[in-house]
Length: 507
Image (cartoon, rainbow, N blue to C red):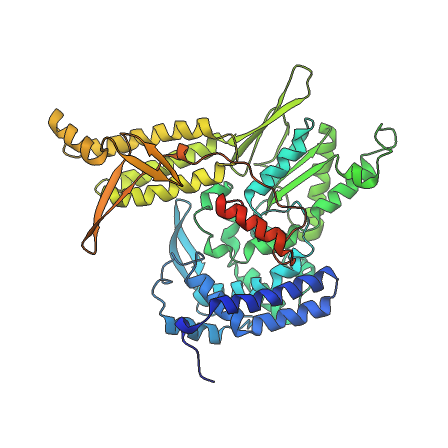
């Protein structure tokens, strides 16, 4: 059989064929038909379409393309890899590549074939579990985001103040019971053997060492996290329903005035929001939270051999405030001690990190051109602001803009600026007066906007450094219940994509 050329692949058709198979897996999983699910999964991992997409996702799109060695892969080698790709139950050609992640430089187990295998595995497993995952699980799931998790908390706390358990699971892949996870996965031998090998070799162990601040990875997905987040979600699946059922059966006695409520209504008296291995639980009483925490610890140990992190665990009243996913969340009471509003804004730690990151970028690029520096800083500024735009962020954006400007001004005037005339020339060169800058359909006038230019193909190309405050705060529209991109509800997802196109980061 002759091989197709990489540039001849019709990616639209390939994606449609795989999406069709994934929707069938989702439907069969919803119906509880495990036999059909596994038959379809075998078809997916054996299809050339899925293999091509896995290689493309790893080498061409955002996953892994910035890692050492990826950019050197030719189209011919991509095709060769796709044709050879198979879940064999082993790991071949594994190398440890020196990669900087979250400001730390260390060796990560990186191998193009193995991560292509992980992507292929994810294509098959994800729709099966999307059909049964609990509605308040938001991390590393298609169509869901950090903002959905925060919106869920907003709705939970809006009506009344609550006691809050803020916790996360301690080093998932360092201590998870592999046998318990594989039993929960309950997949066919070929898939099970491959996942078992990954767990045994520790290829996903570094995922558990990632920063707790999710926003720090908004510029791309770590390569070592291709399959790890999905497996964590599988491991923690069932926790929400178990805790809610346990609560209404054990901590909701008939002596309470609201006992006449239905079982489903009583479930709503506690709240749950989880982002991968970070979660928040709310309940009316502090004693309830303490007992819930104890029950969570028992469940984690019994089901997957995990435990809660003692360092990051907090029990507070919502009026005291707490941090989650880089946000500070606090309930504000009125004089009648009823909830007046829920204030959500970037946490202090989040603001410190972005300012430090920009300062380091400026320091490392003291001799760079303004064009290059702007290109680097723009991604950081816009990415951070996009993440926090669905909160009360205006005051924070203004403050960070001021701090960034001071660093930029220092960077400019470090250059040959002896004497007033020299400083005036530098000012006019880097901060031209009377400029109008267009950003996302709006014009802004400012005499202190860093401007850069470079020569590309004989033409002068200009850029400028945007202000964080130019990114307007917006309302986030939380995903509906158990909605999934695999559920064939095209009307709903077309509507969300339209909102996303108009407002980045909605999905």
